Amino acid sequence: MISVAIDAMGGDFGCEPIINGVVDALQERKFNAFLVGDEAQIKSFIPQDQGFEKYITYVAASEVFEMKEGATDALKRKESSIFKAVDLVKDGTCKAVVSAGHSGATMSLATLRIGRLKGILRPAIATLMPNSIGGRTLVLDVGAYVDCKPENLFQFAIMGEAYAKEIMGLNAPRIGLLSNGEEDSKGNEVTKETFHMLKKMQNFIGNVEGNQIFDGSVDVVVCDGFIGNIMLKSSEGVASAIGKLIKNETKKSPIAIAGSILMKRVFKIIKKSTDYDEYGGAPLLGVKECVIISHGKSTPKAVKNAIFQALKFADSKINSAIESEISSNEQK
Image (cartoon, rainbow, N blue to C red; front, side):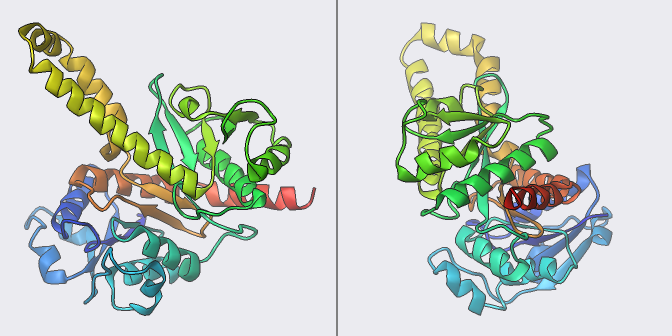
């Protein structure tokens, strides 16, 4: 069975939603869960006499790395739950780590403790965005590095393509470079240079605009972490605003209320397709083992799905595919 290290203390709401998510995951699929944190707190949320204990190992950690702390300070906090969770992967005890804690700390520790894949200059955080045809569009980077060079973006494209093939099951994923227009000449100096580098990739379809992330016309969208993070937060805000707008408007008239009842099933489908909880976390691509970064406000459902994503990633050949493609391009 695959072993997963879980930072049990890192979320915004303490360990309860995280442990509930672990229990829910174990009910559906068996794996070895290494729960890192305050053992007494963690145990209080695990149902007794249901057989979960045989799949659980407790790893004591006396500190919690706070969201207000600087990411690089995590390297000094060797007793923190995130440091110890990452080190379980570093020493080979676990094949994946899941954390809803400080994303910068998780990324820094993973990069420096676990290490980058051979040839990778910078890892990237990838996220799946819903599109209008019922699928998902992979976007990277969404926050790991705000300043990128063309060679970084080129490697993001290689990593994104590998993820789309190995995890999303796409044989020929369409790769686009996020820009301010589809024309070849559009973009800033970095994206223009990146465009010419990406032209050597068989599945590169050219520049894409922000709306194409959601229309199903592209499978992998490449950008730097500054643009990607703004896009991600803006999209989350728009989805939330639309949901609230629909609720407010349906309360204003009987006709609207009746219509909302009839559309309830449709709304349910839309909510599911745009719900962060459905995939649970963002993989950090470019490090030697699986690292899943979850939202601090993750619900048990989000934690469960982040674990499932970690299990699928750890059981795949994505990292060998990335290294092979990076090596191949270095020789050209």
